[in-house]
Image (cartoon, rainbow, N blue to C red; front, side, top):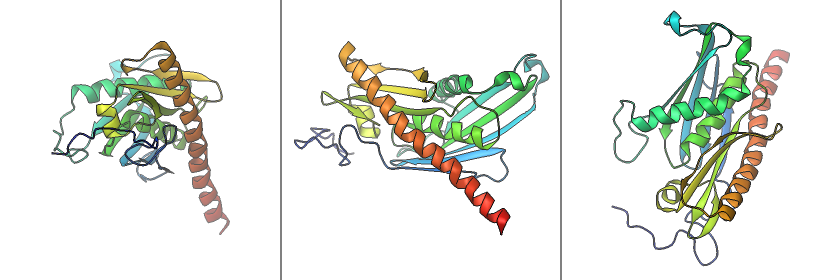
Length: 245
């Protein structure tokens, strides 16, 4: 077993992975990675590896679940058995069911749901490797996959967390910080509309600490938002170059 480190932040103010408190983990975003999906995306954030496929809008099965005035958005968040150190059961856990609902709720405000009545949109999120902050990385990737599918959206949703570690407010918690820190505040944001679509907190924070964590998470979201747009642009620049050839 790994021994618990005495300090998550050293005397120089650096975290276990060498980051400063307000620094994001390295992030890689890619769009259009699943040929058989209507839209897809892949994200690496720290040691997280997550792939998302979007299918739809399509006919609802069973039909009684259809809504007359809007589409039905279904999200499935699933951790692969090999995504964590101790093998996880492939059956959906209570946490996965809860996070599926949380992610769906964070994405719905960005989609023009009324454009596709009596249909459904499926979002499949597969966690290939987990290292803390998977719900946030999954929301970021799912939003990209929805955009890649061509579904009309008010704006891309981007997500990031801040939290408290060794009495310090830090950005983008990794696994050890998530488990051993004092608090975790995940946020999902539509940056241009300045609208928060997800705000949760786990742990204890003073009102000032909570405000600092929210503001830091918002800044992290804005940084990731730029990367989202670059990932989308990169795909379609590539498509344009292929067409011109």
